[in-house]
Image (cartoon, rainbow, N blue to C red; front, side, top):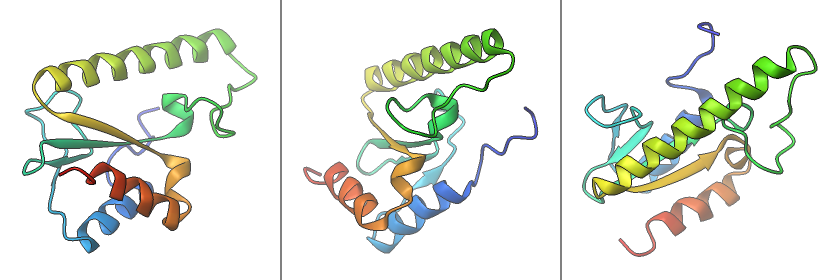
Length: 124
């Protein structure tokens, strides 16, 4: 699993491009914050994680399937991922950050992604 790309993925680049096009400036993968967030917008005190539906178990998404082999391994792996995500989000919230998740499947339709990004900044 060390071969799995976790930085600068195509989905992250789509979100970043759209944010930049809308005039938002951000930092990437700030190591001083828990969970090394994908996108940090310090001016707005907002953090965006671009989660893969498979790895982070997007409920109801067709990409969040469980492999047929080594079921126990995968279920345990997914449980740990979900627990880690909750812990990171909780700590970031306590530090005063607003945390948002953009799912991999939501990056496939730019009009939908546009609405999601607009809703994140609606009250900024």
